[in-house]
View 1 (cartoon, one colour):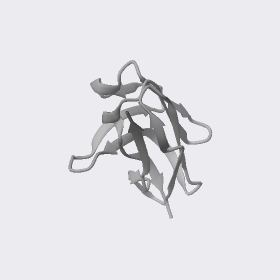
View 2: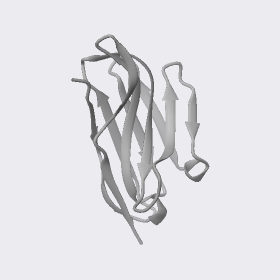
View 3: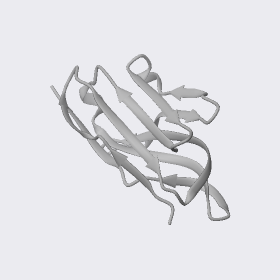
View 4: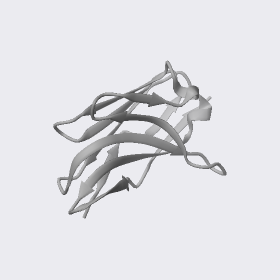
Length: 119
């Protein structure tokens, strides 16, 4: 079964930093892109950052200059370094991957990890 395992969420004060990591399970292969989305209470899920296997990156305007996404192609791992965190960054963060599991290419999602930023 295809799985994405997230880690690194938690609570931090405003101005602090957290690092989120996500590993695509061994049954996934040919990962072409990975990313992070977030969903705050009462809001829609939104893109935070994404990265392609070739290294192309895309960031939400609200996190540009504060967050950095990196990908280890060999390990199918994506990391989100979050600096200068703000209260409005509080949300459940979800990892996703465009990959093949079995014979099917699709977009797979992790379970989510909570990030809470207090003022």
